[in-house]
Each structure stands twice: as structure tokens, then as C-alpha cells.
Image 1 (cartoon, rainbow, N blue to C red):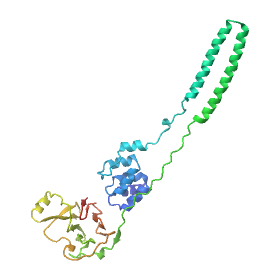
Image 2: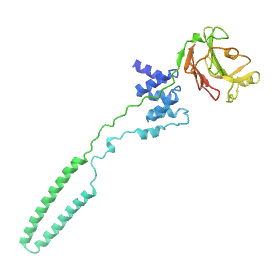
Image 3: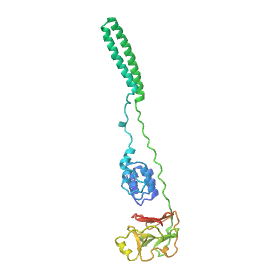
Image 4: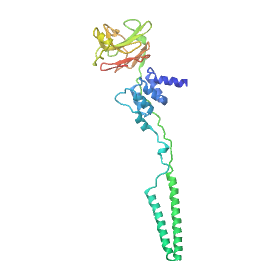
Length: 318
């Protein structure tokens, strides 16, 4: 039970690595609804879970703000995945038109033969006896034919219920794997308590900083970008009216993510060269992981889950 509870917690933990989320989805079908509700489940995994048609997964997906590829409704998933039951399989097939015709013909023959016998009584006793013998022969022949047809129908009409095999779910789509780098390779230019790095393009400058030996804040600044900075509100509005606002994001130790609002340099890479974090690699320091890819830089606090992703063409915060 402890192991099961541990797996359930890992499946629902926003800080569980993407590779582990994919492994849990493949090896533990009972956790898929929990994984579908995990805010850190990546888009490819959510699409794979949706395609399975599991009604519990569909309910979990219905509560998420999914991207344009859409989601399956819980009702639709139930209709698509409901297995046929024995009540939907007829116990006997209905009589075919040909069988109905033959049965009707036999009944008609019996009725007509009975009428002929009544007429024979009105004529002679010998004719009546002959008619009765003829009727008996016809009836014996009809009974034998009916028995043959019934035996054949019993062999062909008895339904055979076979188990419906459940196909093995395909592997979830692969997740990006970033090669971890040694934080010591990214010393801070602004002081000893932190790490700093630039993107390979030199357009993004980032840092993770400590205060008193624990995380203080982390963030990134970007020199050139096409998107508009978020509209400032509250304290950010007051800051934006006095000093420089925008051009990056900052996340304090306890979150949440905010827009840069500063009167000077925030990251060493803005004023002097610092180490470059290559594409396809990551650095983890003081409970924060930053990943570098050709699509931009992604930084996330492993405790709070707060963070951001930014590039010259777009950004997102969480």
C-alpha cells in the first residue's frame, strides 16, 4: 500500500520529471487519470492519454485548459470505450424468411389435409381411411424435416462469446531529455552566491541567486523580442511608472512569477560575458532547473512549480 501511495503522489506531483511521468503512464494504467490532472504533464503525454479513450482520463482532461488540439468529453469517452455486454448479444437468431415460409407451408398443408379428410367422411369410409393414412405419412415427413432444421439451427445460432482482447497501449511519446551540467561551470559574475548563464544566441541572460545559503530568486532577461510585455497591475504598475519594466521575468523563492521591473542590471550576462548553457542541456541549482533549447529557455522552481519559458518570439509563465 505504501508503494502504491508513493506512486500516486509521484503521478500527481508537478515536480516529477517528465521522463518519470511518461514511465508511470505506460507501466501503471491505474495512475493515468492522476497523470492527466498533473499540471506538469507535457502536451505529447496528454495527447497520448486522450487517445486511449479512458473515461476517467477524459474526466481529468475536461478540467484542464488544453491547447487547440482539444479533448475528449467524459460522456463521449464512455460511449466509445464501453465494452459490449452479454445483454447486447441475442441468445437466439430470429427465423429467416425461408424458414418462416417453410413453417407456414407445413401448417397450410395440415389445414388443407384436414379439410380433405372432413370431405372424405361425407363420401365413403374407405376414402376416409385412405386420407388419414396419407395425412399421417405427410405429417411424419414434415416432423422429420422440422427436426433436421431445428438441429441445424441449434448448431449455427448458438452465440459464442469470446473475450475482447485489450490491446497493449503504445509507448508514450518521447520527452525532451536535457543533459545536466555541473553548476560549478556557471559562476556568477555578480557575486559568489549564485550561477549565471547566457543562451547560445547571446540574446537571453539568466541567473539563480542565493541569500543566506538558500534560494533568493531566479530569472532571465532578454535583449530583443517580438512579444508585448504583460500589462502591469498593482505594485508592478507603480514600478513601471518609475523605472524600467519588462524584458524578462523574475521568480522569488516562494513564487509567483513576475515581470522584471528594475533600475539597473539584474544578470551578469547583461554587462559581461558569462558561461553559455548549450542547447539540449540543463543546470539545476538551489532547487531550480533551467533548460536551454533552440526554442528558448525554460526555468522552473522544483518546490513551487513557478517559472517561465521565453524566446524572442513568445513567452509563457506558470
